Image 1: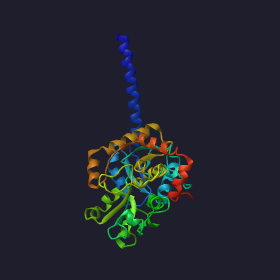
Image 2: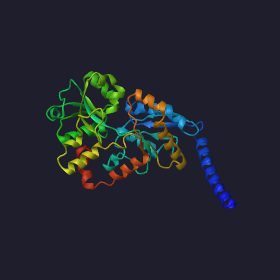
Image 3: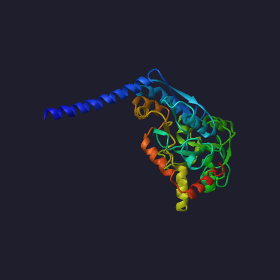
Image 4: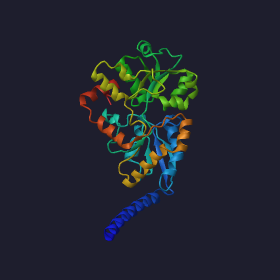
Length: 341
């Protein structure tokens, strides 16, 4: 009996020793290193502000406590940054990216600018499902969806591949709104400045962006949210219709749900090729940061709603949308203006 216990104890100690050695190896690697979080839009918007906030708290959760900085690389609705991280930058665990919306959706829809495989990304998790709204100033011509089907609201957009363009276009295609998109803005902050100047009426973007960058507009009632895109209504917006609430057929509903799903939109990822022990360590560090009381206190001040989503949930979602039937994908592409990409 003593011999059997001794063998079992030795096995446990051996496993613990290997685990400790692996942890030490990760810590040794990250010690004195700099980890970069890439963001595909300009500074000042929702993604940039979140990344800057995360960068202040993530280091203490990474073995070795490396420095964490934020890098901005603009273009193609975030695809240039994604392609760069996936194909060019080091695969040693020192590069992360917080993707823009539709990271996997754009592959499903056949975007020729995309040079990555969403099933090969290391999805570390996400800080919540994005709720996108088409939002205009109270002074804008259309103040309801019914009015937007009759009157023209001018919407500021980044480029034809970003949700700031594809979402209002989908609303035009699927429910008959008359949004007019003006392209060329580098980020949400620039569109909001354009709204102040009277250049455009509104923006289709993540709802939390209004609370974090223009809280006074929210508190003073200067905004009208016309429609929301999400799997369920945001708690702040119980009376604002979901796009899918206008569906008339099962096929309409399936198409609209694809547009609305946002489980991948607030993810953090690493490129394929990063050593597995560093991926696991970074996934744990990221999720631990999302539960860090100090981080959560600052996130609350910035009006970020943190509701962590696991990497597995996002991977399952990616697998699901990549299995859609080609004929359904073709109809989705047409509705979002992506059929010629």
